[in-house]
Amino acid sequence: MNARLRSCCLALALVCCAPLLVRAQAAKVGKLPYVTFDVKKRQVRVDAESLAVEAPLEFFCVVVGGSEHETVLRTPAKPSDIQTALLALGLQPGKPVHYDEATKQWTPPKGPPLEIHLEWEKDGKTVSVPAYRTMRDVKTKKEMKPLHWVYTGSRVMDDGAFAADVNGYVVSIVNFEMTLIDIPEIASSSNETLEWERNPDVAPPAHVKVTMVIEPAVAKGK
Image 1: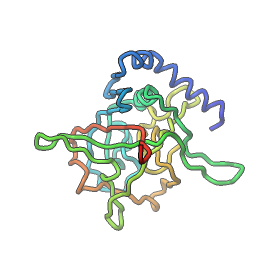
Image 2: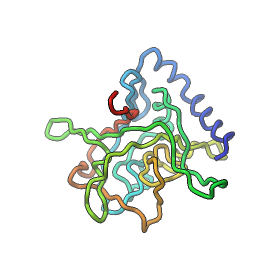
Image 3: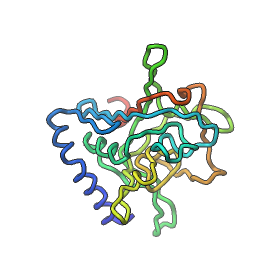
């Protein structure tokens, strides 16, 4: 994506969420459909539902009605509303995966690092686990190692639509140019290279109401 298009994307996002940003500065909290954010806590909370997909995954979270056959969670929240909440925290989107003509190589996604964990109720208590633990290696069955996602911010399409709202890509575990949140390394979406599946030992059962909690990653020692 060229610099002009990227600027337009960010400008559109800022314009769309400007009223919310003003309110957030005063109240420190904000609410959108299925999304809440707390500026002081630097936290975004997204309503979601767990799925029990038994196939290699490409996503951690998609919009309801999207690629539900290859994800851990689905959410009724609009990615543009999650974008608004992340912007309200003061985060600026980075850059999605792209092909660099100069080097003839793919450049991995970049952006502010994020931590994601899940919360749900079980036996009257709140369970909280890091998102990466809900996935495991397809072959070895070992849990995914700790990772930080990156806030890439999707992009605005030629018709003015926010791409992630169109395709429903919220959080990816393989690279997509139009996803809102991606992983910070090159990971192909080719079927033969998919390496992660749902971890039934950690992930909540199917159709459990969960909260996806998104926060800026904190450097160790701080």
